[in-house]
Image 1 (cartoon, rainbow, N blue to C red):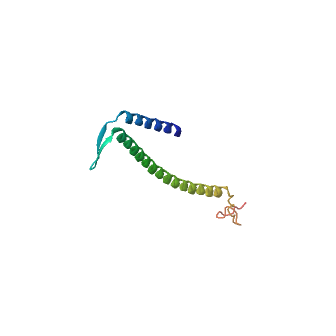
Image 2 (image 1 turned 90 degrees about the horizontal axis):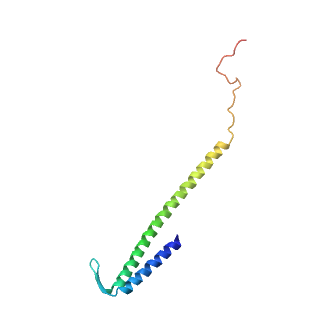
Image 3 (image 1 turned 30 degrees about the vertical axis):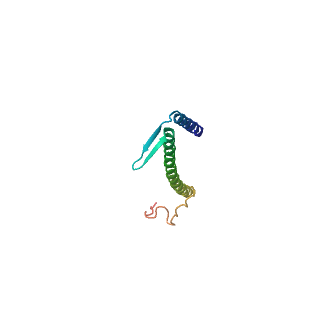
Length: 115
């Protein structure tokens, strides 16, 4: 998958270079309160591609940080639950001691029969 992304990125930038070479005209780039120009159209396209790629990478890094944080929390929760499950397994595996039998017998509340 990473090789495919690298190849597609390389092809994209080759196309940008070809478009930049064939379009030699000068343009003025108007930003909100700032005006740049005249600059070659190829340079404007290349700058837009570079800034767009940088912005997408920044979003990817932020998303990766969030995923790592959530993953760490889930690992801690999994460890806690595994410890709890182990404790329950140990408790179930231990043989319980039998209930003590009173000297009067199991039916201590009942009167003895007269046979």
